Image (cartoon, rainbow, N blue to C red; front, side, top):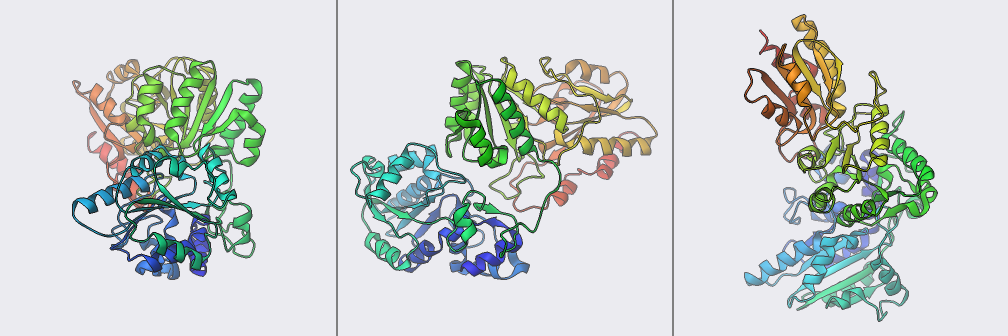
Length: 559
């Protein structure tokens, strides 16, 4: 099984450590339980590669030509052994309690098994699920895969209890799970198939909820992955002998640029604090930067709600918090942004990584909903920079200002240098930058679609023989009514481009503003849908997001 994992991961990349650590536990679960009658729900379902091999999908690991047929996560369309599409974290216990309740209402007798690990117990939903499970009176088996890690190191007081339980062979009087009313059993040899079979046979068909706490080794079977667990949580294609990636990316990286600027601000001002929720590496804080930041760095674990609400408190008490995370995880925090941050107008800075159609591309990790989800919350300023210099200027301004909650979308189309003047002060909210003045057609190209807008403007000019107005809107959350009114004087077509879904996005705000005017507004973005394992270039083409297709659509209204 590990050879099959090596075959896929050295060629395609993917979640390495979680799967290498779950091989024996997966074999034991399938040996004891009768899947799919007995139902497995895998939390952070990037742990499911071994499960997929044992449920008819080994071809996705052995046959390179079929790699793309298999999702990196739990996927019911692939197999009856998968019951939910799951890519995010801390959900398996709650989903499993629902399966158990459904079974009980319908007179079923099957085992329901929730598997949770990789730091997911720190998520609020996991604790809510445990709390509810504590008063259930029917079969529910919660397998806690304790590998002592999240993506990076674990954070949170409950992990001190897991340490204590491991140190006492599960006999510590202080037991989080028992405190919630759950039965409990511990297996220290979580990579020993025989021991795991014995413990699973002991709990099979149990008539009440129980936690099976197993101690596993993340990355087991590959020495580099057991030594450097953080960097081997997920990997690019690599050379097995050296452990070095076989795919490299040259040039600057926005994560590193962010980390450098934030560390500089921390040195200048001890009230600057960087907060993340278990994804420090993707937003510029690998281990060396965490060590440099010291107490000005906070990782709350997989608990984005805590991070955002805490940042509001830090800001209200004089601190300058920066929350950095991946856009796909921000949906868990909508209530905190609306209630805790924006109603209170707390000056919290948020950096969103992978907030692009060009970023993560599986259905559970889409970043294309960020603009429509967040930009319509009152008081929140959503900024979309077009280049490195503007990104850094916006980030520095946001850290220093004390008037607004600010979200800054990290460009997803690579690091571009400035071609137009870059402001250092953005106090005049919702003021657009007119980069090139023309007439008839105006292109408002937001954020990392600015370069596409620039190319489209040049293509339109060639076709129409007229100079096109090119605008960097900079803000996704508000309108520059003065500039929009000016455009009415000598423009008949307004084009908007945005890296996100169109529904509720930037372009629709512009179209609504011009609703009573004799002016055509063409919105270019992504159609609202759940996309899975898509090819970014193909999806862009399907949505007319190429310079040629944009030009064709625009010129149809200029003839």
